[in-house]
Image (spheres, rainbow, N blue to C red):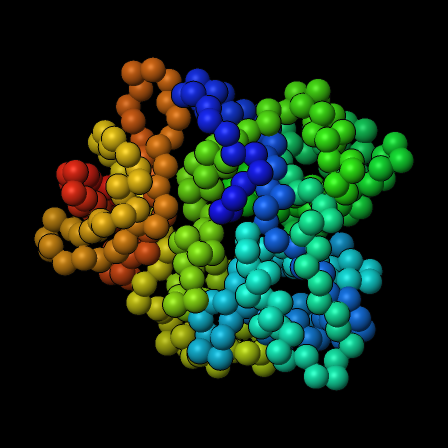
Length: 342
């Protein structure tokens, strides 16, 4: 998220409280800066199906899937989440992606009955995460407890309505909540009054990196092959048939591997600034000085006073060190730090 709406400055104690709330109860984030694209028309599913890695045709209203939009070379042009509604498909994606995705899809529209629209400004988007997220959301809406992963529904309550989407992005219960602009403040107040902690972008980034949830344009881009992102199980179907980029992706699957992968790192030692880790750095082993990876995102986990510092990161690494548990060394201008592949 490049320009988060809820970014502000917090001291260490506030960040620790937000982090603990996200892991122990629930934390709410304003992620309205993410882009939202709407596809309507009778051919919307078959059209989108031909340009991304997952099976859009099989989606029924109330279902969702993750996918990559790919080039003819099998490289990633976008990271999307597609929600099927009775008369439309809604694409959720990272900030600014609509400027690339809409022209990309539009250039292939010929006679298909499809309309593509950027509807980001029409709504506010929140993300609620934590072990108590479902219970807090479902106090007055029992159907929320029955909502499964990759499912969504429309909730109508007290004259207002919002769309609730179950997406466990941080490896724990998580919900996108899409609210009409005029109702967003009321929804936020209701959630805070129910005991939810409203958290900042810094805490969002910490949770994102800690859970290994990659961001397009930060951790990967159009130079990466789809399988390098290592979300193959959730985002790529090998049974859906032909789509743009399908041949190289299928060929990689037949070969069995790519040469580099996104991985999480846990780094030991006191690091004054995690920004130095995402600039010029080198990941290597004790046996070799050869560069085997590059950190793309890093964050210090909020800790109680005097606790041992913990830094987590997302990195692109060579396949030979990608196995979880592999010990590596992160070298920066300010020092060398032992780390382990998660």
